Amino acid sequence: MGRFRKNILLPIVAFATAFTTGCYEPSDFNAFGDGERAVVIEGRVTDADSVSIVTVTRTVDALSDSDCEYVDNAIVYLRDDQGHSAELKNIGNGIYRTTQIEGIVGNRYLLTVEVDGMHYSSIDKMPARALIDSMVVEYRDNYTIFDTIGYYISVYSKLNNDSVQYYRVEIEKNGVLLNDGLSLWLYEDSHLADTYKMTIPHTFSSGDSVAVSVYSLSATAFEYFSGLSKQFSTIYSNIQPPLTNPESNITPSALGCFHATSVIKTKFAVGNVRREVVMVGE
Image (cartoon, rainbow, N blue to C red; front, top):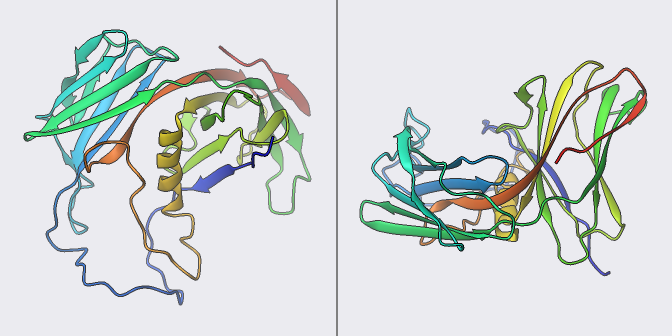
């Protein structure tokens, strides 16, 4: 088929002071001075529930005590290509929500946001759900010399012959989201084999409750999350490229990403057997 495999399991880590001898480019830019406040828009429509949420914020100076500036006076609309439209209600802290737009695979969604007279917009189409063949929980006591002994979860996905599909995986262990702000687990199905295996880089114990969510992404959303990961993927490298913001699909000139995503969620408990095949949820 002539397509190459790309598997991204890149950790998102906090900034740290570097004491290594790295390369850098001198710049006249003052990162701690007063700069232009950029608008940041992040939104998602999903077929998993009826709630669509958009957050609108502004960036702040590096020395600010706040992580961001909440924008609670924006005008936010969400529309689909089936003629439905809704104005999202602000509930504080830059969060806007609606339950009037249904997430349906194949529909296109238009987000429009007005902030202080500036109009921003983004369009995304909800891709098909992931073609998950199965999930396997397997106990390994000799995985590699660098890994922990325990149970590992592997997701087996089928190849979509019509087009490349892009995925993001979230894992909850005993009610706690493992990759919330710490890592983005992304992969896509442009591999040569008919079935692709992705092993989650976490160990589990017998009796743990697990929830696995596999989100299907558009190509633009996948590139945004990939760019977000790459910001920190070379944090320990001896040669540091300049950090750049991930490519946004919000126009004009806003940061963030709006995406429509379908999802498959599976919940189960880790059993006391060496290998178990888990039934994948709808």
